[in-house]
Amino acid sequence: MGRQLTTIGFDADDTLWQNEHFFRLTEARFAALLADHAPPEAISGHLLEVERRNLQFYGYGIKGFTLSMVETAITLTGGRVPAPVIAEILSAGREMLTHPVETMPHARETLELLSGTYRLVLITKGDLFDQERKLAQSGLGDLFDAVEIVSEKSPTTYQTVFKRHGDGAAHSMMVGNSLKSDIVPAIEAGSWAAYIPHQLTWALEHSEAPVGSPRFRQLEHLGKLNSLIMEIST
Image 1 (spheres, rainbow, N blue to C red):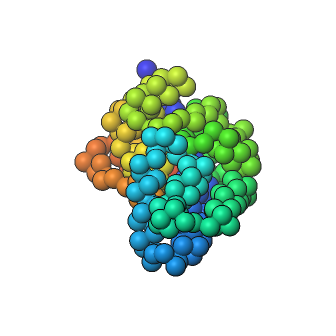
Image 2: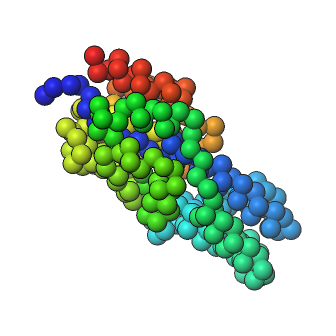
Image 3: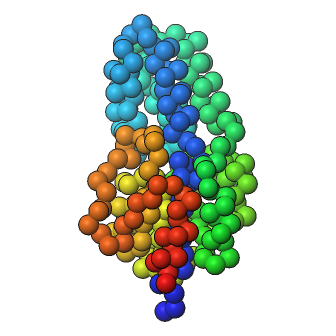
C-alpha cells in the first residue's frame, strides 16, 4: 500500500474547540447554589461520582451533566432542594447548549494545510445534536471528509472508522487531548496517535500515556501537527 499515513482523525472537544472550560464554569456556579449544604470540593467530588455512574445511562455531554447536577442536588439536600435551584441548574445546562463555539489556536490553519492531501475524519463522542451544532458553528465542517459521532471511543471504534474512511488503522493517525479516549485506544487499534494536552481535562478522561509505543507522539499545540505528519509520511 502506498503512503504510510493517509488518514487523520481529529477529536473535537478541547482539541478543535474549547469545551471543558464551560463545564468548569457551570460546576462552580452549581457549587455556589449548594454552598449551604457542602463545601465546593465535596460537591464536585459527589458530582463526579454521579457522572461516572450515569455514563452508562446518559452517555457523554451536557445533557447527562445537567441531569447529574440535578441528582446531586437532590442527594446533598436530602431531597429538599428548592424548585428555583432545579430551575437554575436546568437554565445553566441550556446556556451551555447555546454557548458560542471558540475554536482552538491553529485549528483552522492546520486543517486547511492537511485537507486535500490526507483524508480528514472528525471522530467525537457526546450528544449528537450538540456536537452537530458545534461543528456547524465552528466553520470547520467543510474541511472534513467524514464525521463520526460515536457513543464511545474504543480500539474497535478506531479500527471500524479508519477502515470505513481510510486504508485501515495502520495507515491512520488520531489527534486529540484525551489519553483515555483519543490516544490509548487508537494506539491499541494499531494507528498513530498525537496527544495534544489541554490545560483542563475531565477527571474521567485521565489515563497513563503510552510512552513506550513507537506510534505515540506528544505535541505542544495543533500548529506542530503538520511537521509531525510530514516526518511520519516521508
